[in-house]
Image (cartoon, rainbow, N blue to C red; front, side, top):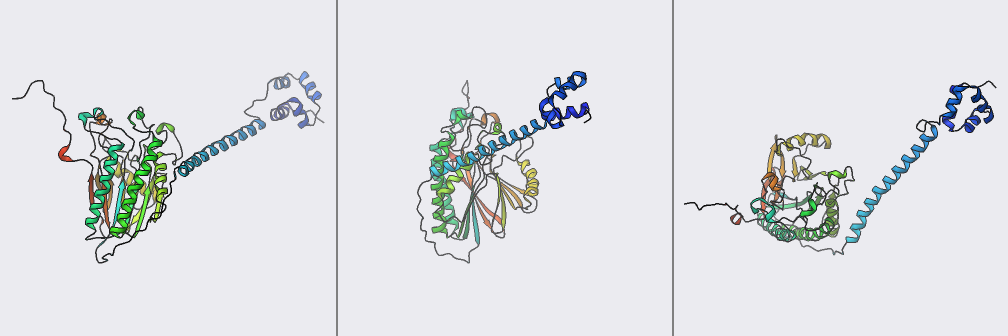
Length: 409
């Protein structure tokens, strides 16, 4: 058998990882290879240098095996997070009974309308002290939220009962638009402003919000005769576990998603015809032939500090992504109510918030007026009525103190 060239021997040595294994693959005795090396300085140099681990076939196979192990571990970790969420929901599940509602007689000659109730930016669990807000124009706590939630249900009920005299309401759509609870990792120092940790927030808000929605469902069924009820939910940025610094995490790894899932579970015996908890942050629903894109609003990128430019920029991208030319966009996040037309018939509808001024107001010297909206939709006109639900009394608003060293004459 002729002596293999040094290149062939080197290749076998690199693949095998040892002189003994290289000799076997070449069909030679190990002593023969070592004999060649004694008389050939080049071959001796090859044997004197250990095979590079990043070029051997064995090391590549080992690297692939390691990557597969890592992928399996990551997949198991993600699965455990989903399993953890399901365990929390199951542990928090409470018994419910199926209610019986008696629908009233309706006048079908009246114009048909649907109801859209956006519920955005509750930020339950946030604690706002007047001393932390410029001019003392801000105060919020779980106790204040309780008062505002009661006022919300009472005023929605009053408005709908009043409108029902001249309207045939057929659909009711609840839209939970994110930032339902206040996380603790969105910006530095955030835990300082919390009255409750996110776990307690989710469990407490679940009870309160579920009770309020059930009360409104009763009104819709018994007082208005609504035929179909739906509830949709998208998460906000404040509910993301770990915030932006967490990097890529499952979209369901969110306190908002968990809270919405718990609320939906509480409604399982209610006459709710459709529930959607969309963790990816955007969904489209239809009512009376009109389509609504629903997002939280942190996706908006404004210009020169003006967020409304962001609606125009997002509109076209959302149409491309969804491949649906939606009629309306619902959002929150900016804590300011707005109705912004876009072209012929398109419109963005921004929602106010439940909190009002907080400690962040000192950075922008601005504060929102706490409230929510009630939207009424007609088949021909689209959104034909927009009611504001305010949580403060404008006549009793806190005025800024004017400091004077001398009394004015």
